[in-house]
Image (cartoon, rainbow, N blue to C red):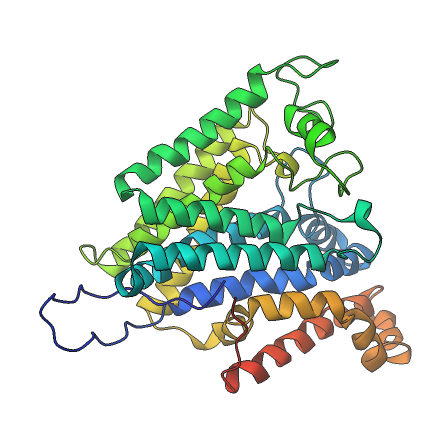
Length: 386
């Protein structure tokens, strides 16, 4: 989750001095910040728009800013896989240079260290030992990020790029085969309903301690397999975006085109293997990955190719300190803080204009406070790294 730069031309072996530092891939920082914007404010926005007396548009926004109950795909369902995808992109922009400096052993050492730190941070984030050992959540969002980073990084270090896609496809097809053909006691094979499917059943039997959804976890054991595939898709996109043999505008176009193709393929696959975030189905990987490719291509085109950066500055501030603001938003109640600043009569005044508008204003204010903190840190070059 650290900052990344685009690799430039290779350094000649006989060069007496190190090559100049290649330019930063600002579009990735901005896209990460765009994603974090919704992570820290999505729930508040969803509730605010659902209560807004704004007609069908407000209801549609409220729906899209919430997760699907089970099968289906909303904008908010994209947020987590987009971050996993961007970890894959980041790996290609950082580990390659690390291998050049320290070799594979140094890279593996860093991979293991960052994985352990992020995994441990995830356990602390969900309460650690505060509610007793039996209430420790072993697998959560940060833990899944750690595992995806670990396995995708090992693929980057030890496998040639031409093998990345076969591994990606193998994970998707293998997970589909397990979920489709392995019978679950009492429900048989190929039942993808909640608690009837193989992923939920394995969590119930083999995932110890606290599980987020009662007897299974949406970041559970078996569904980590396709989540790694999402990270590998980012790995492939990151390598492609550095391919200097193609013009930058061509890279952006191909990313968008590949994204559209993945969305279509995932939608078709979803007719048999439904698009379900909570068990991270293979069709979900393709649909979410397709949108991730489209967004990366558009951000790359606007920011790094056409140099249109001003509009994205707030996202860059957030994106360069994504971990910091994620942790702060957990331990600081920005909703309560925004209510202290603009609640009561101020929010009521907005409500008198349009019913529920006060809630929307408070949601924007809460995210705005987070953004200002990120701007403060960015201007002073303060960045939290693992």
